[in-house]
Image (tube, rainbow, N blue to C red; front, side, top):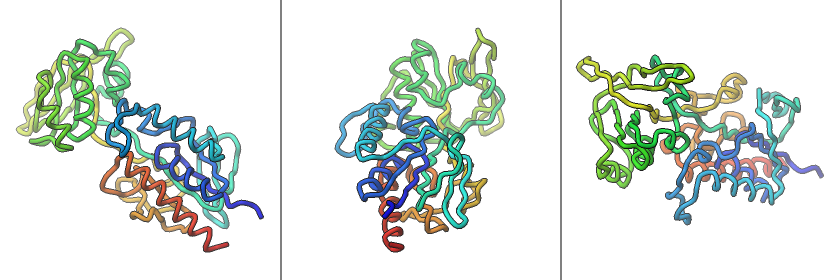
Length: 310
């Protein structure tokens, strides 16, 4: 008898965990990774909040997940999925291989960094505007950097940058930072971190040529007044947005107003053959540990669905 097939779209912690659980149950598992392993984890310099792991670099964590999955027979396919059809069967259309049929699908598209949408952001991207402090912070050693945001990601970015920059300025639209207490306490203790509350960045200024770059950020206070903060870089840390374009265009599941797949802790969607896991679904908390949990839950419920058919 032919094995049931499980297709996973996305190779972050949620997707690879789902693949591991699927393979361990005897399914024929394929992961469409789009040429990128680890999702946002791969951009994380230090992971210190994963149970049982004191410290690991994000890139190493991602590679370990992939290696573990491959040892179980999981196939990683270096292609993007362009569309999904859930008519008589679940069929995926990919960039290179064409159609791929599967018995059950787990979507783990993940999410990407949200942008400010202000003048100068696109023009100066890569020339001082960044969304990853650990990726680009070293370019601004001894300089001044602005971090825009007030949650855990902003705090983590500010702390990382404070080790390489002379000065770090956090700009946040509310009157106090939010996030884990241990992170916030560390931020408050750093002498070279300054916080500007009740302010939004309305423009990033600089020269958008090869030799130029960011020279500052224009902020607007709640009273409408504006001022320019001199800086060599602006690191945007204002949250994520789901990478669910394929699901939206294919119309196979329901999405909320923000574009997240509507699914509860069971990771089930409207179609009994389609499950969703990780940062691309509706949920309160988005952490590595919750993504891994989603992957396991989605896979186990997918297995239960297939068992009910067989």
